[in-house]
Length: 116
Image (tube, rainbow, N blue to C red; front, side, top):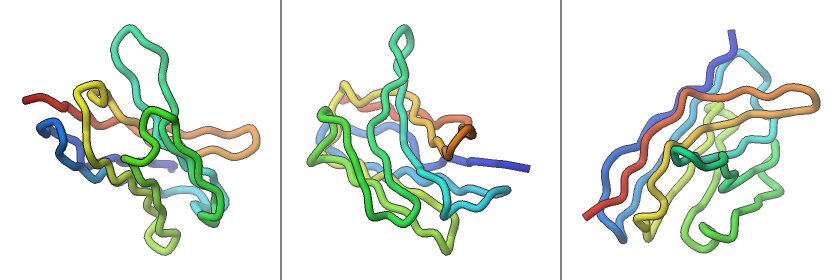
């Protein structure tokens, strides 16, 4: 059974940091591209960061570049998103996604609220 379980969301003040984790099970984690997406009600889901299976390719959305860091530990079947210098506009539900050709898995999401 495939599972992606996110954790680490919460409430943080502007300028603060959070680290999201996504633990995967039920598939060969190291062969999947992993990404973090976020969604605000009424808006399209946005991909904020992506990392290849071996970690050699990383991409960020322009809105988070220089502030967020994606990483993965294939031994632990876990992908992380370190979020620094958080802004109010980073408030969203953050989803973990695993994908390969013809297959895409999603986590249940974790809420991040950035507010003073």
